[in-house]
Image (cartoon, rainbow, N blue to C red; front, side):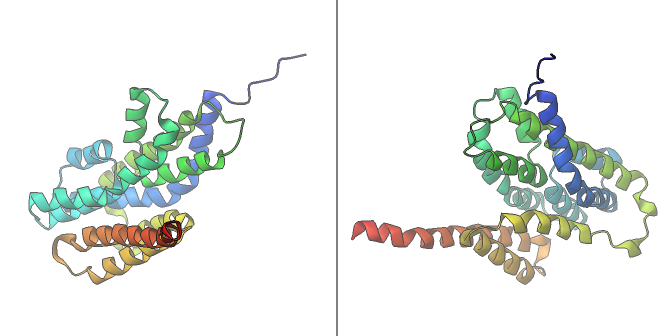
Length: 247
């Protein structure tokens, strides 16, 4: 009788992460192509445009930076806007920290680099699915690595396509709508409480109201407004229980 194959292995976890990330790539690939086109139209050299995807690896920040460079915005405005837009990554890190705390520094640094909206959505769903189970895989970081690396490769490839051959795509295709669809698909399932809904509604309203502001300042305004709305809703939710204990 042959020995039973181990249920959890590094390879299986890695491939599972790759497989679960694949459906999201349908929206990410056109997004990367559009970034490649936008970066070239903003005047960035090919190496810089591709290098930004490899080093920064943050789609929304790359879009905003390229647009601000095109608009000749001051360097301070570019840095501040990118910083505010990427503040959400600190929340992602805090959310995943309990699960990756036992890992070494090399693993933490690698997974931090691969942490994007799409990789976070897949990884945190896996971690939450395992909550309360006694037979948790010891190789879940390989799952995270598979999801993040799959997205990284797709992002580099789609950026290169946008840079080198995307100029042949007819403008009438209007592929930029996939950006909104990708984020809607990621955000809507995560709106499970009042604070999240309040943050999303406030950020959306402020983004629309501030669309005409110069240098895309409506985006950092919307991000800050969303954070404050979420914190306010969470504070109101806790207030009755606090008052009850005081009485």
